[in-house]
Amino acid sequence: MRQVILDTETTGLDPSKGHRIIEIGCLEVVNRRVTGVSLHEYLQPDRPIDPGAIAVHGITDEFLLDKPRFAEVAERFLDFIDGAELVIHNAPFDLGFLNHELGLMQARVPRIEAICTVLDTLTMARQMHPGSRNSLDALCKRYQIDASDRVLHGAALDAGLLADVYLRMTGGQVTLGLDADALEPGDTAAPVRAVRSGVGLRVIEPNSEEQAAHAQLLALLDSSCGSPCQWRQLPD
Image (tube, rainbow, N blue to C red; front, side, top):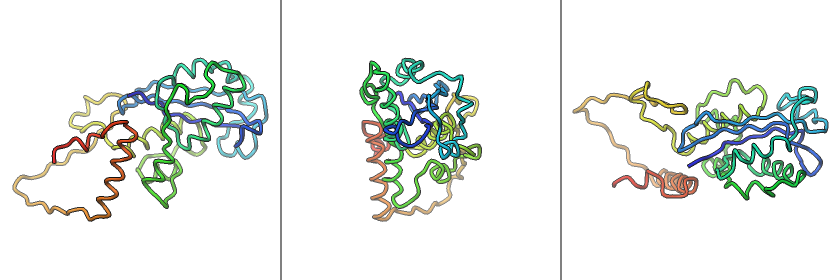
């Protein structure tokens, strides 16, 4: 399964008011492993960036003067995401801008959804953690992901953080961590604890509320995978 973790930065909040994309960050994940293959572009928007947006991402008009326009990188971008599942935090925002850019240049692809499926991690997080803050920063704290470098937003940086968040939200570790030398790029090793034989361990049965939460999580995993998750395939 090929997924692309995607994030954008923009000149403002609303493409219908002429705002444009100024940065795209994409990170490839295959079979739950970050491959290291990526696409990252800064873009010249041909319009000023709102001061409020600069305060968020720190990208200035002067910095973008010599950068390519979206139309110049569009084919490479579309080829990179073609056929993948896009994983985006607050997908309607990024898709709205991307589809607006495609419309402006009358691209061969009218909408991103014509060549990709989309998974919105903000919607998933709200279902998993109702009543909690589910911004990317909040999720990094919840899943103990180091976001100390995120002084300002950035598409490439945020795509990397979102990849870590998504993998932990949907199953956590991807290897058992038995042999650190055998890890491939993107794997994360989990600590292995030795348990002495002959020691009686207390078994705490889940209550009804915990069982319901567990069932809800499995349903989300089934939905994101497109098939029953591995947990459901374990013997009773």
